[in-house]
Image 1 (cartoon, rainbow, N blue to C red):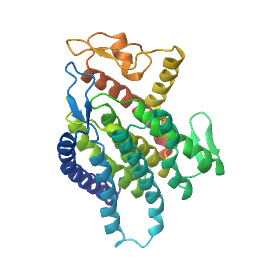
Image 2: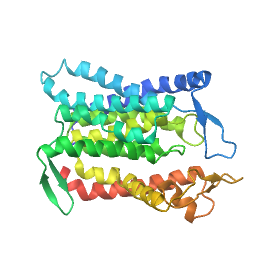
Image 3: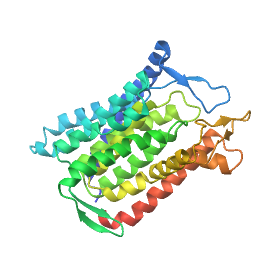
Length: 331
């Protein structure tokens, strides 16, 4: 439990990733403004122009942090096979991040993203990452055999890829959501002494902690689809590598709820796609059929910052609840 060496790996990965992202985020903001890679910050009264592909910084920070630490790790261990799931995970995140960047620049249709969401699963399927036995509340242990790699992994990766992107659009929401989830995964990885998941989660966490500072209200940059697709895929990949299937219920609980509300949105044939902002900056939600519209629809004087904080509090409560229920599995 909390072995000193694995704590050093976590701290080192967070530090390296944060330093790299700390240099990259301001540079990406500057270059994006000069090149016109911008969008409008829609949930503010004056809808300011803001840069979009901030998620590139933690993506590159993640890649280089993994490379740096693995390069040093090779000198102290001869078991290179432990890096196979890490390699598959990194490839999955890179594929997701590249699709996100293409979407930020060229605007991919949402129908196409449903199909593209299967691509990040391919490295995990090819290297057979994870175990076919999963532990579910009330049901218990299930052995899915080949169905795990060929059916379950592509489906859950696709859901994580797209659902994280659906719950987005407010300053600090996606990055804050991701930081909370990665922090929980890192805690469990340290608890069970899993160096691969520790390195993976910490390398993502450091970069997104820095990005959150620039993305928090009032944001200097959005994280874009580069960031949301990187986060959604990275979190589920870490859970698959670490066989932390129970945690997925908590970490993606709010996203599953948002998906159900989206189905209601379609069923009721709602036409409005964006909320309106009144003169005081409060959100006027067109309907309650989205997690980010729920609080503004039912309560008064909910501005963007307050709305994000409320959603992150709900997410944290769900995550802590599932973590406490599942803690006996990990200890």
